[in-house]
Amino acid sequence: LENASTFLQYAIKNGIRPAKEARKTLASVSKKMGNATAAFDQLKTIAEASDAERDDVVAFGEEAIAQKRIPEFMETLKKAVTKWPDDPNMQVLLGRMSLSQGDKEQAKIAFQKVLQLDPTNGEAKQALEK
Image (cartoon, rainbow, N blue to C red; front, side):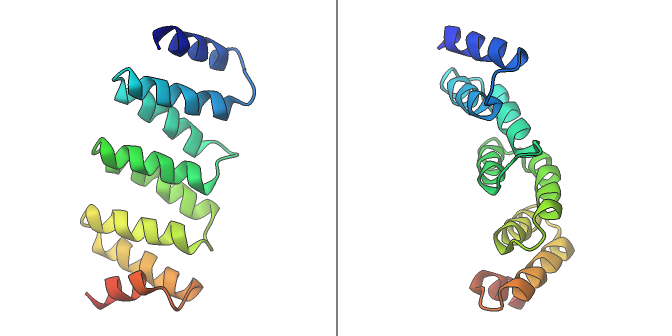
């Protein structure tokens, strides 16, 4: 695993394409080696890239939650919500994470936005009723 990690780090540094796949593999290898910080950093880089997809943000969020690094994830999530303002799933995630951080006002705004986008969303309705 150490050789794989070294190779991937070198490849990324030297511009391997597609870098996203190399970073995902490096995150996985790093995690298996017990280097959670390196895995977190790779997933963050992927989630914040200009070509990031929603699933990349979610994967980073899962890792951030596992490592109890939600405040760092919130920065990325807020950028994602700006990138995809009409995605109710991103808004729900923002609402959940805001609640977990005690930011009830941000959560309320996010869940209200969800209901504008998807009036049938049960999670947003329940969250706003509390």
